[in-house]
Length: 478
Image (cartoon, rainbow, N blue to C red; front, side, top):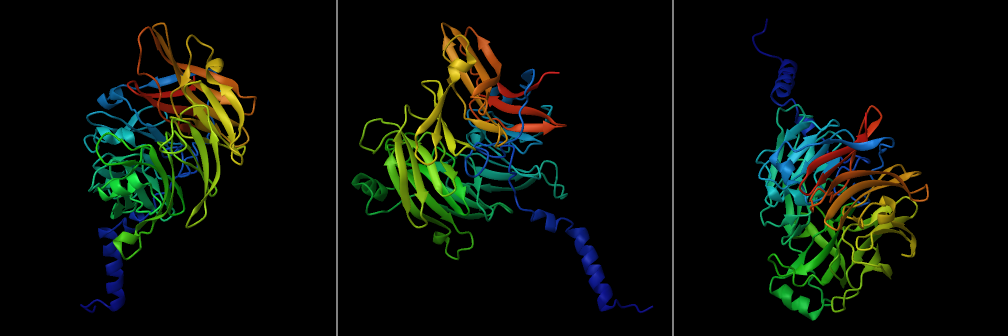
């Protein structure tokens, strides 16, 4: 036998040893892909539609489990809380540790983050992909965890990247090319590569426009900038940020100066300054209380006033993206200031939450006119005036949409809170109501966020968190 290897044998040896040393090179490059159903991120998808479109429990419905095993669960969540992909759910909390926790259908804890993320995690809903991987962040870092080792590399924490210039992240979103975008309060906008966590770029949002109000031009020269308290919506590689002007710090003294800013993410640009660019901005009287809703090429959102200098006068607005500019489709007066995002209805409309009057308004895409209203307090029909306290999640399917929302009431030292399901096709009738908390004293056991659904063996459970009560699930009682 020849003591030297042939070229063919050397090639085979190289391939074999490469597989031994790097068994998961291809798997590591699997894109982070958001599922179409299940509420896998803030407001369900990158359009901020709040459309879950998984079936809900329908008969003998009640609380099937409630966890308070971890300190973070007892600390609760003041944000959107849960996200899920239909199989598992992940929730962010405001505790000392374990501020990202993953659960299965039964409510068993599959994984928790320990000291990986700090208490500001609750400001961002996690993102859950089709392979059960999770992206989450706090005010210092963003991470990708693979708790079930999908890529078989023996690593749970696939990557973590710092936020070099700080800011409070209001839920990450992802563009068509896989760039993660983090818009922040009191900080810049960031873009990261979702495969390896590499920072693509960051940018302080300053419009530098000759048409800006004189005060904004002066304050911009003094390092004023636009921040957000909402999650952006996404169309392709363009992100729409509902922003308010600030000069930094905790207080937003200039939040009356609102702006819808269209931001393009170009990760392959050779010049750093061209990787995050402003395409156009539309100014209005702020602030805005909800995340922008994107339908086709139109962005729908609320504002507290007509112009920065006018008094409080709540508006709903529709702005069409025209590429390098915009067109105002309509601006309509609405009954009250909005504290939650508009939710898309499959019937060419969207829902507006009126917390003060305990009502929901279905509103036309085309005209902005209110088509119908739902009396939340009347549907619950219990002691006290029950006012909406959560965002809307729309479940089931497009032909029979079912709206999930929570409401709470305080009446003569009596407190109660309910999660309800409304059958929108059956004349907005009450499908069921589930009591979450009741007592003589005020409680923080009320839902504030969204309602992802997990399905197992054709049975559904709805997950949610409360401000101080931890995680809960609603399902059919056995």
